[in-house]
Length: 469
Image 1 (tube, rainbow, N blue to C red):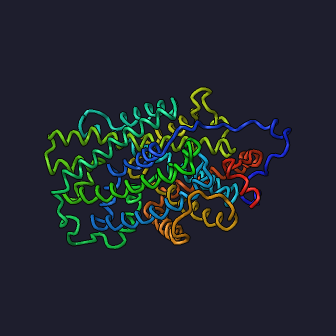
Image 2 (cartoon, one colour):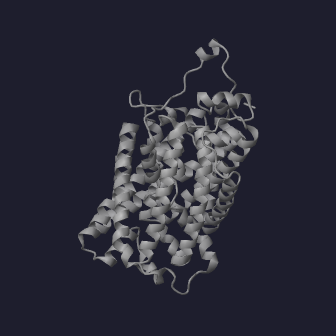
Image 3 (cartoon, one colour):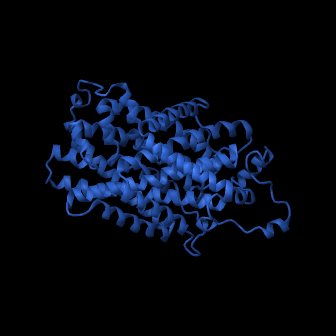
């Protein structure tokens, strides 16, 4: 069974153990509160921008329907995904689950899909940070601010995970507080007639389908918490707590943001830029009101929280793929004292900077959504396969209502993947090209390293059931 799962046999001789270099290990410092901060922080920028572009596809009611569908998908997905992340607490996240269930080639597909999501999301957030700054300081160039954001947070992530996690928790708490204040100010002024105005679906039911990629932005990258599994003090107990608290928080924030923003502002106004919340608040108060300025200033914390959290996520994914042999080995090197994956932070950051200067927010969001929905599909298939082929695998958390939740998650993920591919065929071609390049590199170089670096994808307490399943 171990060979089927892509797991190595147990080392049975001291000679083998002595001749094998120990794999690079990350530092375990994260607890449930940190995981809540990472879970909410990864996603919370989706409340501040990006989703508003879906109004141009479906109108307010159509986007609300799309968000409700996506919310159901994420609830079912995260409760199912938590089973995988606690059974195989590995920094590779989706890559590790796919490799364990379906083999090295599936691990490559899941790993590349995750990289597409996590490498293309930060440029979109960085551009929105620039837009928020320019909203208050018009002479500041958007792309210059985005570039400075990349440089500053690359340095923070290289410094150390404990400092990075504390910063993530701090800025996330501020961002959640500000959204709560935004709801309190705008809530009494919400006019449901703005949301349910005729024509109810100005672009027809097709608009709901096309709005799904932007509805996903409310939750995109939530699965990234699993990539911190090797840095969690007690992953079996702490990951479910962090995921559940984060998911509940994000559902409330997503629905509150959509209703309170579209309920006070003509929806076409919200398509003008990447700062819909300050625009909505200025309708209730005034553009020069101190609280409107505060929305801009503190709103930046929400964007910074997601930018920083996703940068942490992509660095752990690159680190895991390089450690396994899928990427050049130097990308798995850790700083000798800080134990941070320096090259795994820097190189994807350079790709993100290139996207900032040649792309736009819409394109970056769509590319990230392609990677996200594909990895959701692969992860749910992996869950079903592992349930069948490794029934004795220790599962500290089991997906509730199995198989109903994972079936719903898989079905909706396939629908969302189809919507993303349909909405931007030229960007789908870009993703296909990236997969083709990854496959060529794997075939020419990486497959030999992957075969010689067979990983134990389970932590020591979980390894034995997998080996003897």
